[in-house]
Length: 234
Figure: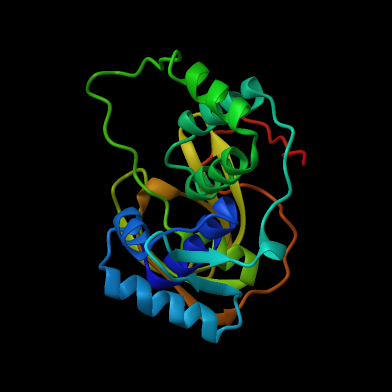
């Protein structure tokens, strides 16, 4: 996890548990960095006017101001578990980490009774997976960030024939299909809309170059012709 993602994650972690605190040691263990790194991160957040304060003393730690915390949510145990199951089935998606963060927030603001019931129900659920299934490959968060920011990505890519190329693309949308997740983008090398399987993208960097406003048309050559698109409702 890069520093920008970690700073965001720390804020979300403190928001989820507010008004309770998290110690520097607990945060360091969660994000696999040193206590000193966490202390520098907290200082950076405070300098950026994020209302994080230190609660000193034996049981002290870092906390987020109450106004930044979530109000109580009336999620039932089954609703929370339904989200957990969906997340477990959606590993290696562009929204995996965000989903896990959202679930932690939900559990943190549920009543103790409902949260305990949700954990008890989740403990009785098993998901069958192939024994030799490869580990899920994390999707770089910079891809989603580039869509939100409207910035060109510079990527290395191996197509379905194994041909390797480096190119600049203008990200437009994500697609999910039976073969995994794709990025639909305007390819500056081919000068047309193309789809790129996310697990075939190697190195990826977001540039400062703005993208052109283009309609979401076509899906590119990597998508089978017998598939149709369905939008996500929210």
